[in-house]
Every structure is written in C-alpha cells, then in structure tokens.
Length: 97
Image (tube, rainbow, N blue to C red; front, side, top):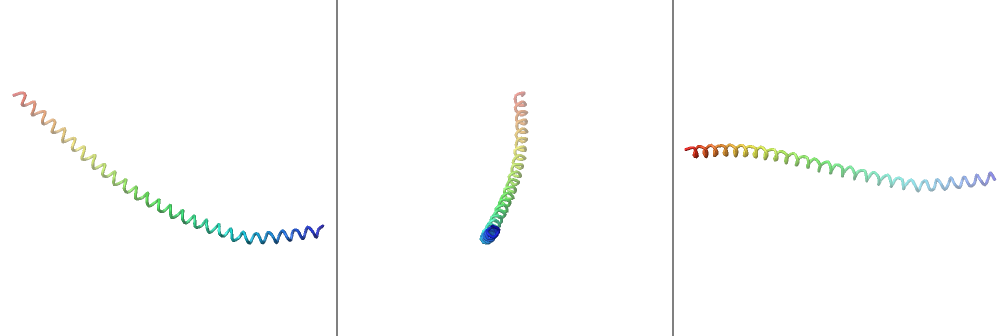
C-alpha cells in the first residue's frame, strides 16, 4: 500500500514538474505581453498628456483673445455713451434756440 502511494506520488510529482515547465513558458509569455501592454499604456498616456498640454495652451490663447475683445467692447461702449451724451447736448442746445 505504501509502495503504491509512493509510486503515485512520484508520478504526480513528475507530472507536476512537466506541467510546471510548460507553464513557465506560458507565464513568461504572459509577462512579456503584460510588459508590452504597459509600455503601450505609457505611450498612450504620454500622448494624452501632450494633447492636454496643447489644449491648455489653446484655451489660454482663447482666454487672452476673449479678454482683449471684452476690453475693446468696453472701450467701444464708453465711446458710444460719450457720443450719445454729446449728441443729446447738441440736440438740447438746438432745441433751446
């Protein structure tokens, strides 16, 4: 009984070692694929960061342009108000004569 159990254990050990060797190459292949996937993810992340930086620069340029437009519009409104007041005074003067 002990000899049979010992033989079965030896066969199981041999089978496990054989399967273990086959699995080692599979594990290495899986590890290589994981490393390649990680490298691709890093490259994608770097590309996304570059795109985000370009978008931030474009947004800053757009904000600057919008600020300039607001300043020009404010000056134009002030000029319009000044012209309206001047025309109102001229109208009042012409009506009082």
